[in-house]
Length: 437
Image (cartoon, rainbow, N blue to C red; front, side):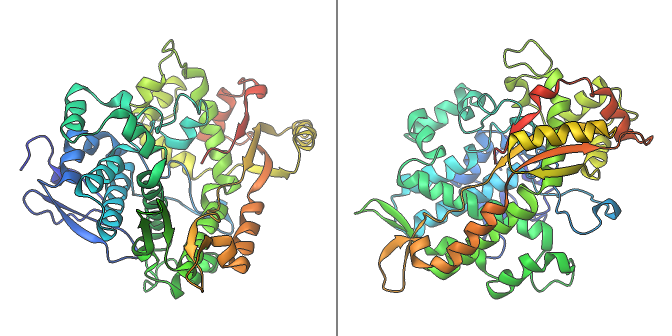
């Protein structure tokens, strides 16, 4: 076994604990893509060389997000278990498999697997909540090379890869960049779905509020196999899907995940609170404890420990702070304009409530421009192949566009309210956020 890493020392909920000597097992949910990765494979080599086993194993895939059902204040959330390490490995696996199925050159397949390993390597501790305080300087795609040392650059040179080439792929340029982007979206959608509802055959999590997700999945329980539908036309230099119906179901599920999880107002308000906690400790030039460089080195737990210590949280353990935050539910008012939101902020303040800030959610790329074969086997944008499904997805995307005023009643004597009162002095003018996912 390569002495530089030992996957058996780490625990993954979605990476098999039954490790063979020199191998590890990863899989794409709702698909048949499950594979032992040999120690001498390019994917394993990249995972070892770039040292993603340690830090990314302790950076959560969904940070402070939780799926909010009815009566959220009566729920107890213990946190999602998947992480950026598992995500990166499965993106590399999926992208490489798409390359193999399209008879790409072995060097291109290797490049896709390496790019999958690298695309999230510079994710800051605490994920999107941290990124929102300085999107330009905390963008993992822009700064992946900053965490690559001389030995790792030598590995890339031996593979015939330049920083410029990987830069282009990681920001989704060209055919390989499109494949990586598709593999990324397939992976995070199916991984997040499996964390929330499990498998359709399971009797766990059959609550009525999950039916909107479970229904399309029950008709396409192998939705992860959409990776098999990705066609790389090397002559025309275009990437498209071969099954527009399966693509439609995938895009619908992804849109529903944005509505109910990624852009759900409660989760967005929680991220805003965490961002407000981070701001006094953050400086892009390194003059404060948290900088882009430090956040790219830290685990979630280390960043939470810094916050717990700085704010003298009742318990200094960062993990306890995470549990408190993910079980806290801010209140909010939905507005259509910033002017309306500012007026609503004043009204809420006048009622004696603590206003956390205003956050603007700008919607998301619904993927309707993806190319696909239609019923006549012509390559067209998905919205042309299936206007009805495209309209439904577009409607869901429109529902996520809003401006929210987040507030709470901080009068009760709780640990979170104590923390809220400590950060109440943060200027309101800096608490207007744009959705970044």
